[in-house]
Image (cartoon, rainbow, N blue to C red):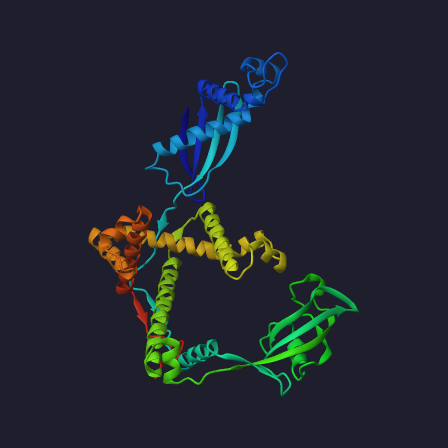
Length: 440
């Protein structure tokens, strides 16, 4: 087997491979061994037909396709191992068959490789700083949610249903007098004003008394998920069985102690303010880092191979699928209800995926240029910190870690160093307007 390689467009290497007659014959024989159990020729037991007999009946060409795949699977990894210092592969190759006959076979492969990054300025850049400050309104919203979670439901019998009530209803929907799928339910709980039903339905229930039955006329929105219902007028026959209201507790020191364990309302406010500000600071830090990388990207030249972008697009689709799962929806159901295709979703991710890959390449390049590393002492300190967080001894905790976990810690330390370096060597200017007023 002989091969050569040369640079190709868009951060690829063109690999040319030629198998000698001997190598090709060996691949054909391997294809025969793979397939011989399938042959059933008169005069021979199935699976024991000699190679020469099969060639005589079908010709050697019968084995060519499998032989090519066998040759690729054997020789391509060998070449990559031999050229590991010269060919840094970042994706699957695209093979092309150039010539094939009994004497040998010639193949070419376009191999996506790690692109050269011509990084621009990454020091002395001015970026407007993003800040997120916790407001008194944020604290009040948190207290309202806490009180709401601890509210009690009480049945109401002496008045009509009103906005904010939880109602228990039966309903049956029809279009032109014909009931439609999904338009009927019994004992359905509905919070009036929640917007969980189509426009006009909840407003129609308001004012009903227990035992009332009425028809509510509505029109399905033009963007409704069910294609056969979009924009159509419908009538829902509704019967009201129960009205429930929430008794929200008063927010006092006693309530706070019972609900959270904190001694006083003020102590709880201080605690949640600190927690929220910590989360806000982390969010602002991430956005400021991304802003800086975006500025560096403007003067950075890199030809990203399609394989790297495709991998990131697939990763983003997978992450989107996971988020849907948390909401109880499968990705295929999303495509069905939204009318969007997987191809369209991937296309929508292509630009942000390209941006992500470029920024990651910038990060890797700066780390290499500035020789940023993590020492064993720093890794050990981070392991000890994690061990303490789960109340384990350092030796016990580290013994349960694998190389992947240690590598993750090492990388996180290096990335922290990178952004500390970038923060020190660039200027984050005071924002013209903060994202929220400072808490008093």
